[in-house]
Image 1 (cartoon, rainbow, N blue to C red):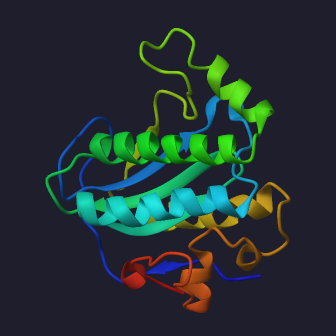
Image 2 (spheres, rainbow, N blue to C red):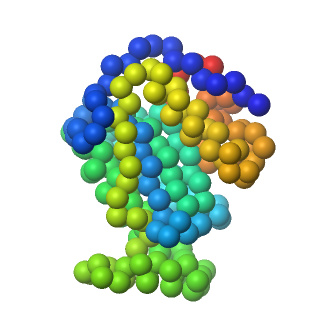
Length: 194
């Protein structure tokens, strides 16, 4: 099993609560409606990964850590541009939802289509709702909190009994940190050291 991560430099990042704008380091969680396990096939993971890559450039953020679980996602993002965390999450959720809807229709997955169609009832102009309305965010303001959140992210698949070792979960930044494997998505690992 891998060791816990240690910070290599002090980070002075914003405060907690509803601060917006650039320069802040955020721990973010977003969840699929009804905790439906949609991220169970490679193609759905890839949709989310490709959206992360695209919006990383579009919104100018550094991806510090991530894990994609079957029904939720944890991210640590450092916003550098003018975009807010709300801007990033709005776009990430909106366009990943559109693409996952297309994939579900292509494979004729009526069970999941029905779940997400039913969840859109009452939402004007929507016929498909993948993500819960809100997302959770915590401003990371000390090196200790950053270390704790990165470790929480990396050990999430082990705690859920999806894998025995953090390196066995393909859709986590643990592989970036411990194996220097940037093949799934590039992670900005320069803030943290083993």
